[in-house]
Image 1 (cartoon, helix red, strand yellow):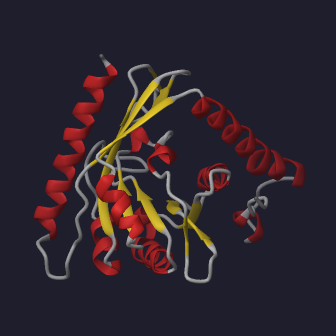
Image 2: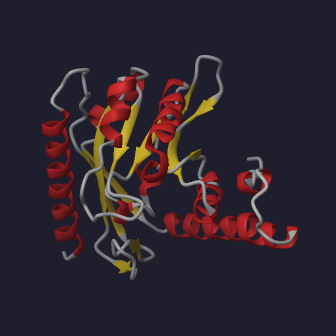
Image 3: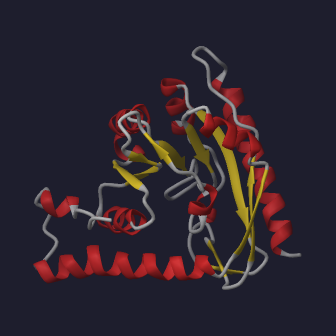
Length: 240
């Protein structure tokens, strides 16, 4: 896998010396990714409700995985698929990563999992970010979205996931991931990191589309409620 580009450095951002850039945006993300991969290799993973999702993948339908931000760390487990476009070029899942120093580190980390970063911040310029996301889906990428990210409000749905689905015809797939043994970080969402050798369950909801002219208010509330029900399920499993 080629090294990730330091895009904000290429755009002339003042990031310090070349050594500092290499440490912050190449070495640190690489080490973080390897640590996550080692952790992931110790987990015992089981998938629930994945039959409909696998059928969509087999039919070459685009999917949008929607999950709450606190479940982000091990969400690559929710995408065990191998995909390519008509030209045979490898495709997989993409995410929206902010055009900032934190976003650069995040994009560089997820790069080592084969995850494509679409740069932009919905909160600052939602229209431009949405256009880039639409372009990625039309270029045969699936998408992973945290509808309450990157800074909340906690477990409250933002409309971007519905707009992306409506514009592209992609299927929204609610998903959650639970692990009975986890560390809880002191972040705004109390992000969860599974402890080594944990039992992990990845659970998918029922996929759905957002037709043009549909009642997106109702669809959004249904998706939010569905994700919160899955969060309740995951928390109950966490305490088993």
